[in-house]
Length: 154
Image 1 (cartoon, rainbow, N blue to C red):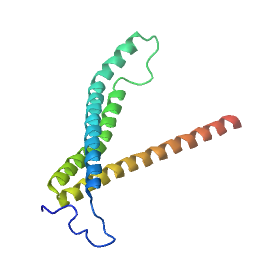
Image 2 (image 1 turned 90 degrees about the horizontal axis):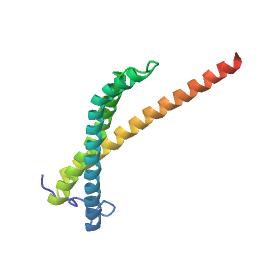
Image 3 (image 1 turned 45 degrees about the vertical axis):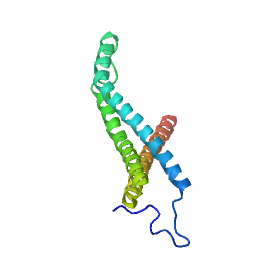
Image 4 (image 1 turned 180 degrees about the vertical axis):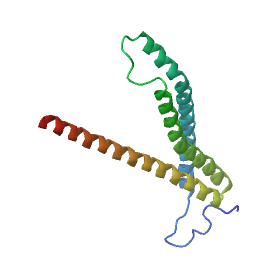
């Protein structure tokens, strides 16, 4: 399994991983690790906040003369779901950085392949989430326009 990174890439027209590219990949792996650790900390804070936000909303609701529009149990669920959704791309980014470091240190092609597999998963997940939110925003815009047209018709 310990194959050099540029093993099999000696033919013309095929890729070769030079020392400069290795340096770039090392830098990318370090920043990916840093960003993924920040992501894990943010997710942890979001989950911790989800446990206290319900109590905060209930307390604020008791001081308000009018009832709060959302229940105090709804917002913590939203925070936990948001943290769960954010976990996967952050985890994939962390795994990319870990495998890339091993691949570059050991010149191991299989770890390099695994690293790029996690990077692919990271971007596919982000792309799917972006597509879902774009569709949801589009539906809200269409519903808003329909509501406005119905309001003008009356």
